[in-house]
Length: 336
Image (cartoon, rainbow, N blue to C red; front, side, top):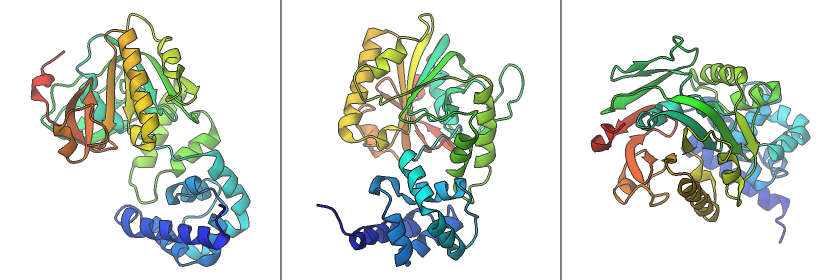
């Protein structure tokens, strides 16, 4: 049964009202204003109701409008711009999706990567533009005093993260980088760069500059990016087979599993298990909400924040975007 325009507009109003009340406050005053405006504006609700329900999330719609030229001003001007450009906005929202590609996540992954010997072949599921495939090319500044730079000197990408109880860290030797994404982004494409930076919410200090600097790193040495659904049979195994045999294969899923429906999530985990069985010495690193699955053990389900896990073991509590790391597996920290 097809919903009426009024019913769809009501759903838009409720979604944007919830975003304005629960998600935007404290993070983006501008997005809070825009979402509150939509929630009270029937005409704009009807416009946004033209966009499929799974492509009209406030962060995606707001990012697309900014990418296409909407000014970061008051709600009235934004709504007027939207009305004049709704067809283009709708088309871009359908073609794109939310793709959080935050290089700061490498600050959360690095403690686990430090435990792995030898050269590494890095394969990320949900890679977007591949910014998290370059942990060896970034500089790190942890509040516990562990500062790390690439062998060539400080990187233009400096990742600052809170830290508690971390083991001794080291930069990995990454010799191969690849990723899978439903819609990979090209670090050398002006429109993809503009879209990725537009996904940064107004008011998030320093994040856009960090992403731009990381995009420049990726553009200089592009990874292998495959367009595909990693939950489908054979996709992950096909890409993993390209990794050099003398490197430790490390599959990462930082923050992607919550965005996959439960059935697909189970399939993906099974595919990762199959790759690990077929290639002994393969590791799996992930950053997930506690309780999302049982791979990290029952204790991790009650941890605050997100869980950094590796090879069936919960290692640390982390901020989902890497802003802080609290190590909780001291017995693992001594392993090399």
